[in-house]
Length: 227
Image 1: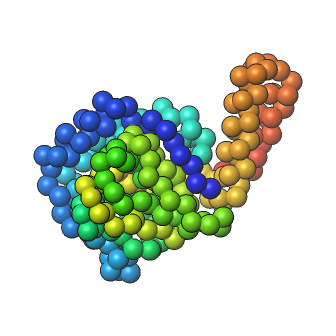
Image 2: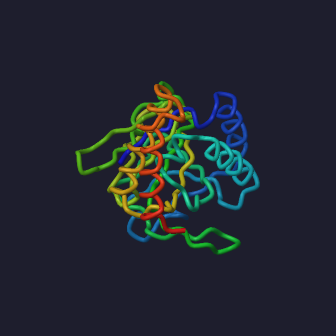
């Protein structure tokens, strides 16, 4: 399942991120790549332990906590602290699959990467190329969203970033361990939750159909969730 989460960050928050990142050191992006993907990776990245990155990461985590769409789609258990990357002219990231397990520095917590996320920090009109291309069961999906929007997709998907031919593409990227490991089960819960949201708007919270659908949702979550 590929999901667009709109307006995770406001325009002001995006501008703040870019201002902070503009004065931050950027290093070779291969520092977080696995042995195979490092061969295909050509971009820049802010060091994980940079104070600026940590502050912006906390801001993004707070925004995710308030996003109904993100929480509905991801059913998150753990979120790897957001990182920041940059693709300038000529840079790209060839086809790869993300590592299955990530370690959060410091507490050394393991995160199983069920979902990958890219939060765009550059307006699409400001660069050419740089599309995130995700190979899914229903074919290739090319993603180039507005600044502040985010894409969620299964970490098991083969994906790539096309070469930049003009400008520079900045984004935040991270991974999510979901309470619901199976993508098919997670998709079913997301579709059901979205239907419940529409039914509540049309029928009200106390309607018999809304109460019944809500019960089904929570009973499925109770059956499938790992906490």
